[in-house]
Image (cartoon, rainbow, N blue to C red):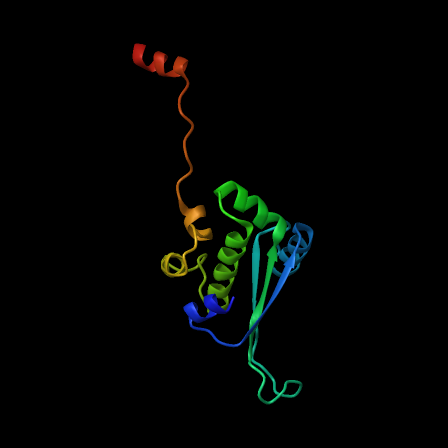
Length: 150
C-alpha cells in the first residue's frame, strides 16, 4: 500500500477493508446507489478536524474496500495471483483517493494507472481491462460458407 501511495504522490493514512461480495454490494448500494457487488470502492476523507486526533498523527486520506471474492475470480480470469490482483485494486483505489476519476476524465487516470502499474511491476489494471474492445466470436464454418457462396 505504501508503494502505491508513494507512486501516486499522496501521504497519510489509508484504511483498507478486505471483505466479501455481500459487504461490497451493501456499500456500493448505500454510497453509490448501485445494487451490485464490485471489486473496489474508494471513500476519500473530508476535511480533517483536530478535535479527536493526535497532534502528530498522520492525516487520513481515505478508506478503501476490496472484495476478496471478486479479486480471487479476477485473478483466476486474468492469470495472476490474488496478491497481484489486490495490489491492482489498491492502486486503482489510491488513484481515486488522489482525485482521479476515470468515469469523468479524458483518459488521464487510465494513463496514470498504466504508468504506475509498469513502474510497480503489476499486470494489466482495471481500466485497461475494461476499456479494451470485447472479443468477437469467430464465425462458424457454416456461416462462413454461406457468406462465401453469396
